[in-house]
Length: 337
Ligand SMILES: Nc1ncnc2c1ncn2[C@@H]1O[C@H](COP(=O)(O)OP(=O)(O)OP(=O)(O)O)[C@@H](O)[C@H]1O
Image (tube, rainbow, N blue to C red):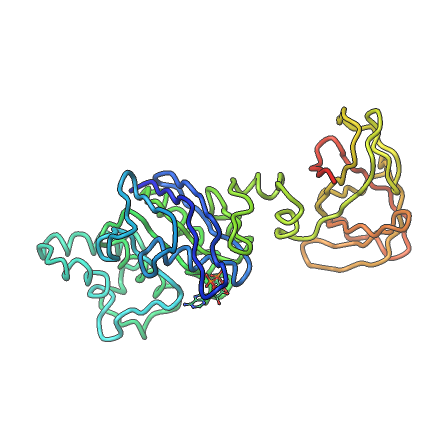
């Protein structure tokens, strides 16, 4: 278990900058998710921490040890990615025992450890099966057990669930999160799946174009994004642009009293679920589109020429209905422009 510090990390391929001055501190026992769109540099960063590639610039510390020049096998970090690469000719038991055998650990200790992991990973009864006799989720658990057997200080997961179906994926997300907390192992996980990141992370590092745009708890990054770019990454948003004068926000959807005391140009941001339909609303609109999504409905509502997206459990409204909307400006995020 280690804390990890990344200082001024940069990496280019040819003349393309892939990672640009990345700084990140990860505390011992935390699960950090590196989240970002395809090609943003997530795997490159993870591979540099694992020691598979080297960075052009910057330092990587595990606790007080600078590990830039330490070879992969001595870093005490293990990587599990979507290409599980279990040994096909070895049983579950032998796959998990492999790393310990290579290290010439005493047979009885290996047996004790492997059995503990089999218990922990819920693989009892599958010890003597070969990988081709396992489900995708079981294989993924064997891969994680094999990685954990050598007691690494750092666990690196690269899209570990991406090949699994949705049900299995949800089960394993919860399972791995619980396991990670139980073992208190510092973990960095790469994903491009926002929901997975919000569900699993202690903190999310949002990487876009090789830069960390925000490093924060799931709740803060979703509810208090530092920029419109971060806000939009997590899904649709409504913006209301206007001016604050003497504590009144003046915009094309109306005038509202707000708790902002300096006169300024402001853009308020509301997520679709923050658009509340209620008779006591402070805005009037008309429904122009209805999209049924099963557990909720998305309505597009025209308010004075601006289209607002509203996500609600209220399913009985229809196109053409007049609605009244409540916007709580005092709890909304805003940006200056
Ligand atoms: N060995 C390499 N040589 C040249 N370019 C590379 C190499 N490895 C990665 N890249 C480029 O670096 C950029 C970042 O790649 P990386 O795999 O880190 O992205 P990612 O965020 O993990 O994407 P994804 O979610 O699609 O896996 C991409 O443009 C990729 O083409």
